[in-house]
Length: 226
Image (cartoon, rainbow, N blue to C red; front, side, top):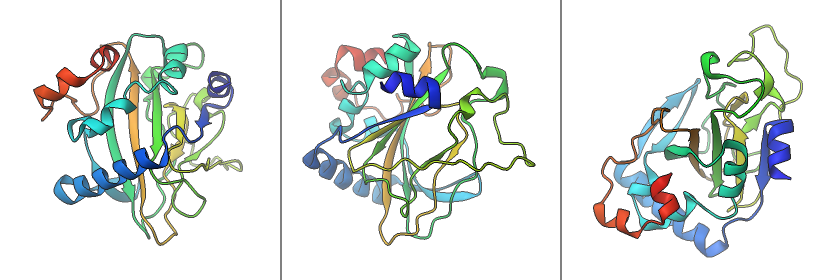
């Protein structure tokens, strides 16, 4: 069903992939990482906190790379020759504004038919709600020719999928999307994994930077491959 929804609408949601204990551990790790190495980040007229290369931070992030509830969906759509182009965390604080709608795929790489070049996996470390900055997506926009909505286009249908903490949003990187404004009183944490087709795709964040050799030894075969 998830693969069908990604093909038809451009996205799908898998609820409650992580349990409460797993989520609590990642919350603690992200907050510590934000304090130690987080940076201010601005993109598409919005700002937030950014933590790069989550798998280099702690072993607890490794299972997200090839999670059995997520990887089969990715491989059914993209095939098995995929690369994790990045796995970063974006933390939207109370008062942080909404991003402008955009696509992660430039026009030269967009595909109206066939296998897309990238899927984004959004791990909801905090539950996504209408108030705290849930990612907004224009359904079907993965079929559009343009990477950005035309300035004169009125878009009446923009969805912000909501789900509890530990859920996963998977969407075609060609979709017009953007982080929502956080109008709540709490931070909204999320981890974003960019899965790209084939080793020819450049990394968004080089996963080998500051990656401990001892952690490599702990990884599964599929994690190393990806």
